[in-house]
Amino acid sequence: QGRLADSGGGSVQAGESLKPPCSASIYDINCMGWFRQAPGKEREAVAAIYTSGGGAYYVDSVKCRFTISQDPDRNTVYLQMNNLRSEDTAMYYCAAGQVTRALKADEYAYWGQGTQVTVTA
Image 1 (cartoon, rainbow, N blue to C red):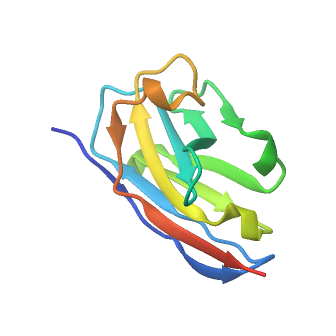
Image 2 (tube, rainbow, N blue to C red):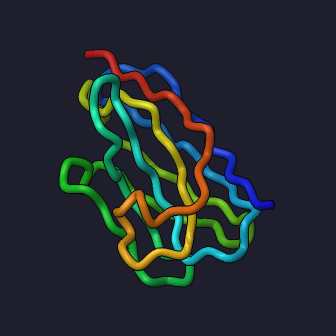
Image 3 (cartoon, rainbow, N blue to C red):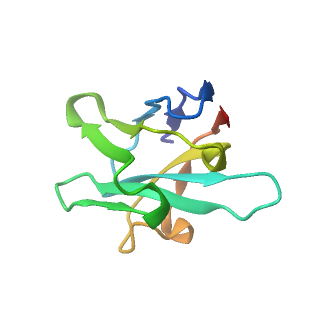
């Protein structure tokens, strides 16, 4: 059975950066993504990338600040988060699966344990 390992969260000041990785030992997938959930709020998509070169997708609130990339040799996806804001504070989850809509959480079959990102003003 495959698994995802997400990590790399932390506590930072507003304006700083983080780059959490997500490593997959799963091979029947075409897409990997990051989702987040803040206390009292619903889970939302952040970014996703098709692993065979089909492009990357972002939610509007992180465009121009976050970049998702992959290292196919290591089966790892990274989420470069720059200029972090307090509203980015959430538990971040990596996900993977065979999906047609990259930012739809319901399409993902595999999920990591989550990594906490806390941004203080």
